Image (cartoon, rainbow, N blue to C red; front, side):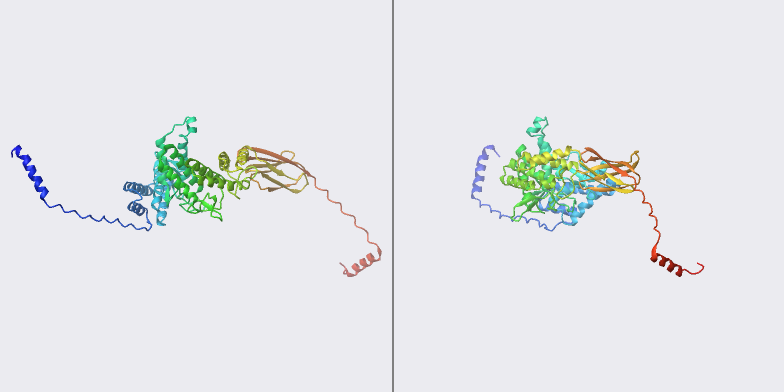
Length: 503
């Protein structure tokens, strides 16, 4: 065909196209029906992963990772023996139990399988099995794990939040003044990991513990952890400018305002928050350092996000806790929980430090003098009580009363005048007065020495002297008096009559 004929052919083609009948419109096809996914809880780990994938709560790629980690841990539990193998077997068993109970919801998959994976890594690493409660870090993972037999390695939310808070501090003015390097990528990765390990529940974000503790079943929460998590995420949002972290911080704070046990708020008769529960499963237990830390976290969250309601919650909670401070104060130490035992050195120091934090934020009166007292108690030696009678007479059982103003390991020694040891005993002293009975048989001067080292490492010594006198001389027998008179004579005669002859 000649090139000159092409324009004519094109025109004819266009004419035919113009005269052709219009194309029929294809009727819209109905959308494919969404797959029906049962809302009933899954009762195996693999079924829980499959269900979460079908519901769209986790991506297909995430489901593949979860399945690989689960099957890898199951194989490790079968192949590795000894104590290290027991760690991964515990984690596998506890996760299976969670699934059988229908409690392995999609929101808990990340934390549950992270603990299983960490248990397998610890078992294969050859490292020594940590003590119960010991914490472990894995390379490339910002999560902090804790060994919780019989649950294996488990995610420790508060420890993980603490790492995020530490990373955020390096990006603050305090960090700059101290020469710390701000690592924004590491900070955002740690924040993303914390959010992934949390459990969404409606408009709240819960940092759950998936091991049993103190009567609480796996899945319990704590006001201290929730408030500190909201604080850390709010600080991350302020540093990075990312809205998703601010939204996660608000969701974590909302869980604090929900009533226990689904939330951490203990309500009063008027429907207002009376105080925040250290343990949502035991709202009556009041833990001083935990409630102080929770108040600090809420106050910082409120300041960063400009949340006036949260600020009022922090101030109201601090005023209520301030009324309880005298009950936590023994005059020489602090109690761990209200009406309970004295705190150990670590928890006492936390109570003193957090009291100073509440004081600095001016949340309520009473915390500034309390912080000063608690700090003084940390350095003071114990005040010892030692009492014994000044004089006793042998043989005697001497009762020695003794005690200490704070918990102390004591050594009691009783010596006579020649230095011989009459008693040598080691014991633990507390605020209640105890008694020890020492038998003394010889006269002389006895020295009672009491030395004690308190829980803060400070030592005190006290001694008293007991004078033991000689026993009283035995009284001389009185001489028998001669019998006189008619009555005595009659009595003698009567006795003679009753006597048989020849006797």
